[in-house]
Structure formats: C-alpha cells, structure tokens
Length: 608
Image (tube, rainbow, N blue to C red; front, side, top):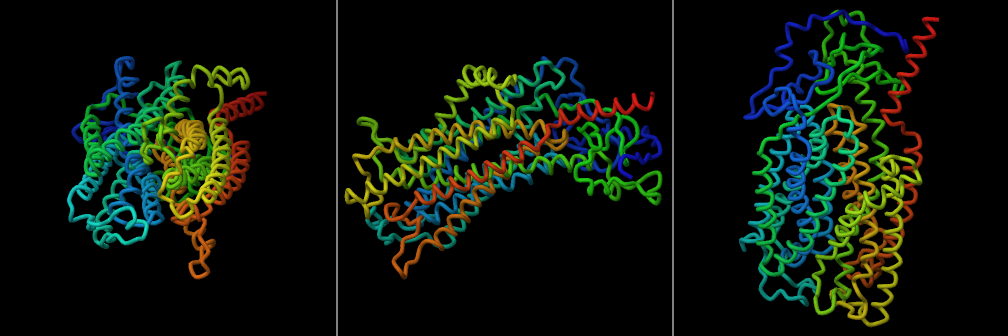
C-alpha cells in the first residue's frame, strides 16, 4: 500500500478548539507546558507562533527572548556545571581522605554519579516534552539538585556522618589502617550524591533546547544566532568548570570540605532563584504544510502540539503499520489505537539520529578515565609553578582553559580558515565538527599512553616505585597539559557540534529528548568506564600470584599506559564507525528539499 493515502473524514474541529488550547495555570503560562499530555489525540495547529509567559502571541519579537533571556540560561548552566564538576573532581579525594575508601571504589562511585546524571537525562527530556515543558522541568530538577548538594554539605560538616579522623595520617592511609566509613555513612553520602546526579538529569536535556527556543526561527539571522548560542552555551559550561577546578579547590584547601560543598549549594540556590525570573518565549515552531501518506489529521492541523507536520518517508517502513487506518477504526479513530504519519515520522527521526550520539560514548569514556585516573598521575608529579604549588585537584582546569581559549578564537581563526577549505558558511558542518572532535580525542589518549609509559619508567628508575603519593620533583605535572588540552579541543568540536546537530535534526516537539541523547551518551560512557575498569582489574590482577592489576592503587606498579593504548584502539574503531554513520546520514533540510522536488516533478508528470 506504499504511497497510497488513506484519507480520514474531515473532522469538525471547532467544538474542541478551546480545549486544545486550554492551559493549566502553574503560576505562569507556557505554551509548551500543558496539553502535551494529550498529544496523541485531538487536533492541534500544525505549528504555533511564539508566545510570552501568559500564552499570548508576541507581536514584536525584538523586545523579548533573544540574547537577554539567553544570558539567564548561561548563568543557570554555569552554576549547574560548577556544582557538577566541583563534585566530580573533589568527591574522589573526599571519599579517599575523609571516608577512607580505596581510590578504585571512590573512582567507581564518581563514575556512577556521572553516569546517572547523564544516562537518566532521557527521563527529564521525556517529562519536558510530554508533560511539564522545559521551563518547569528545569525549575523542579534544579530544586532536587539543591537538596542533594545540601545533604552532601551536611555530610562534610557534621562529624557523625564521617568516620573517626584521629591518628589517620598519610602513612595510615597508605597502609589502610584508617577507620573506614560505616555502611550507613556511605549509604547517606551515596544517596545524596546520586540524588544530585538525578537532579542534573532533568536540567541537562532541557536547558540548551530552551535557550535555543529564545531565537526567532523566521529571522534571517536565525542560523547564525543558533550557531553562536551553542558556542556561548558551551563557553558558560567551561567557565563553570574552571571555577570548580580553581575557586572551589582553593576554598576546600583553605576552609575545608564543608565550605567547598556549601559554596556549590549556595551557587545552585542563587541559580534556582534567578531561574524563577520569567522567560518571555515559549517554543517557536514552523507553520505546517499539507502532508500525504497513510493516516493524518485532515487539513493544516497537526496532532502534536508544537510540531509541524512531517512528510512520509520510506525509512523504517515496518513502523508505518502504526499509522495504517483500517475500516474498523471508523471516522473517529482512537489516538491510542492509531498514530498519525507525523507521530510515526518523529519516531523514525529519533531512530535515525541514534548512531551519531552513540559514537560519542567513546569520547565520554575517555573523559571519565582522564577525570579520575589523571588525578592519581598528578599525585606522583611536581605541580609547582615557580614557588607556587598548584593543588592536584586543580589539574583538570587546563582542559577548561583550552576550551575557553578555543571558543574565544573560534570565530576569529577557525571559521574563516575552514570556510576557505570547505566552503561551508560556518566553517564546518555539524557532523564534520563531531568527526574532528573524535579524531583529536584519539591523539589525546594516544599521547596519554606514551607519557604514562615514560612516567612509570622514570618512577621505577628513581626509586619511587612504592611511593605513589610522593611527588617526583624532577618530573613536572605539566606534561599532562598536552593530553588535557587535546581532550578539551576534542570536547569543544564534538559536544558543541552534537548539541547543535540534535537540536536542529530532532522533531520540533521532541527537542528535549533529542538533546537528552547527548547526555545519555555521556552517561553510558561513564558506566562503560566503570565496567571496563572492573573487567581490567579482574582480568589483569591476581593477588594470589602477586600479579598487579593495570589499575593497581599503586600507579607505579600498575599499567595505566596499557589502558590508554587499549582506549586508543577502541577509539580508532569507533571513529571508523562514525565515518560510516555520517556518510549515510542525510540532513532533514536536504531530505525535505529532495522530497519537494520529487513531489513537484510527479505533479508535472501527471499534468502532462
């Protein structure tokens, strides 16, 4: 039945027009917030005009939304990322020095926190697109985030939540003689740590999409604004990371763990208050066009609020059965039994997008390994800059600095240079930028393996083999900057390109879920790091035979270099898979243009 249109009878829409646009009062009105829960039924206008917070159309878009609203979003994301990275870099040390947990189990706990905060982002994206809208999803999950940070602050402040610290010096830590945390103490800490991760899950998939919604899609500068927005958005992420790796570490050293975690909670609280300032723009979407194929709501209406109609495609044809109208469906088919073409095509689009974010899981895995394992490397190296000693936990600031520098010079150097080579108005397409990032990540992890091999041999030759917490004064920690800066460059190209790709390619009413793909890929990378670490420990270590694991707590007897080279090989395979997926992918705009040309040619042939 391929291309035959199965028409449905014209429905009288006037009777339920008021119901379709009725909004639930939540203190403020949002066009994206309410009737999403009835998106499977009813008839919505296929595409809406931008509205303000009271649900009224905006006559002059130049006076609302835009960059002013975007800067509020940048501030929220900066505070959230400061808390996220502040916990990531400090929690391993907190669990080791205060809770007296081994480095390996501390790293795994942090990896799980990172994984939960990203992999569960699909829940936040679903709630935003189906029920709450992006604004209220962010507001609710920011509050959850704040509760988690408050609980962690109390753990670091009140002595009953931590084990006894008396007579627990560095030698006792090395020998494992310090009193370990009680099970209930670890349960308390992990509960609030993972609650914080769950709070991040609702923010991450929504905030970039909500920010992009603030720009008028009908403006001739829309593409340029969108491109710059995602770059500045990631710049705010970077600034938050830099503050976490410097100011928060300084507060921890000078004033203790309670003050460090408390400052993160205060920053998130301020962000939560500022977020309640109203945003004037809801989701802006396109006017719909007539559609053909299988069952669709008649006329220019779409069954999905905030989404334009999508033409039928031949991809994943097995899914078309969901829109196949049968005689017994009658003139008023149930939305629970019969989907429209647009609903089916949205699922197809989400499936077509999957291979690209899936290929970025490897980058997240590398980032996770760097974040936890490089801290152990830095403890064995000299972190002095002249007479100034840089704390080990400040080392991850350098990827952030490289990202900040690259984004600052992006439009001055990279875009003009690449424009001459590729002819692309933005220097490189979204998928090209993702590919550049993945390629640079291979170089980064390969260099990490080379340097770790050199560092390990140096430690053994100079008598540091069993002093893995003692710095080697003649070997500078700043050799780590090469891998840090390279991975920072990789992150800029890959993640910024991916966020922009997912936002533009995802269906209009499912952009939060589309953005959640990037976060889910990041979370899966964190979980993959934990799984890989556990496999390596069990496969390469044997206490009975006296064989040290590659990931031995004593880094000088372990083989971190082997792990980095294993990651290099996996990254090369992953990059080849990405090239295959990218070559097969067809952008929606190009696909729609080709379909219009084909349709016009068919009509001309019929006329002739």
